[in-house]
Length: 239
Image (cartoon, rainbow, N blue to C red):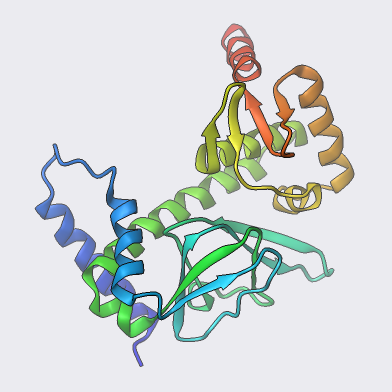
């Protein structure tokens, strides 16, 4: 059985080779869609698993999960038994036990999901899977950096605002009022991600709604308003 270190070496080689073949003018905007189509068609759904919202995803020792559709929350329990949100995994992104040393690590679907299970050996021998893996891990790294920067902010209000902006950037879609966050997170999940309390998050979200920076639409999704975000930028530029 191939180890994860071998897979990473192969991924790096394939990704570097790909970069050498792509010209600066090449359009890479369709890469994610072509990767998703590839993993669905090449396996003809034989390893695609449907997981309902709220279900735990088993973390298999020598396998990697790719999210085709939906959203998965990665978490763990602290020494005090509190839930820690370690990250969110969206379409075309991988997760699995091979990528962490955290004890009590778990993955939970926070929407209905379609997931693809790949053996590490399959990942090593498929250049397109390896390329998709490399791009996805780069995105996960950027997400982790952003979360660390948020946790370094002293004021909880700034953390919550920054976290919602991060969600809107990664999982938002334009709407009439601004950017609609397509996934739902409970106040407790937001609090766990930002090392604060549910009560504090509820209070801050109420303040943001009063300011007009945030709205909740008819389907109970958060909307970051254009007017609110514009006023924030203007205030920062004047200070």
